[in-house]
Length: 162
Image 1: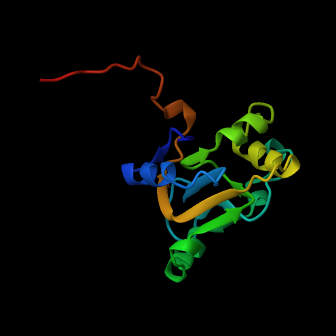
Image 2: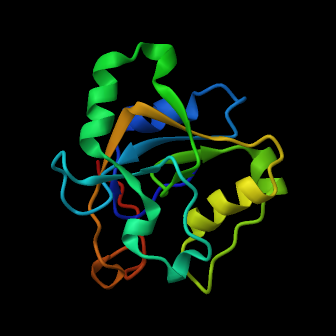
């Protein structure tokens, strides 16, 4: 499972992703790509491969779908049509198969862009892997700068209360 630290998910989102047929080597939901969530804002999904190398690209180079496009699709789909193949998804809540993880290395482009590198490598080393997105599973991306995140800054503790 991949769960970014600035993404709000529900238990239902997790359950949906976890319980998909194992034939999906990569299945995810989707989210807004910026901290805003109106319909003219981009999703984290593209029908195109990311620019290569990703760290030198522009935001526009990714050619993201708009939220309004996905919302209009939701009105038209039946359950079997809600899962679509994509060439790139900026990591939302995702489940990757063991087969994919064992065959496609995770890498960065000079410390950047693990999700873009994975999409590029899936195309380059295509071993029958396709990324899928279930457009019914929508999450909220906070888009918080790493300097403001609190994850890992304090030691994790578990409190048991009576």
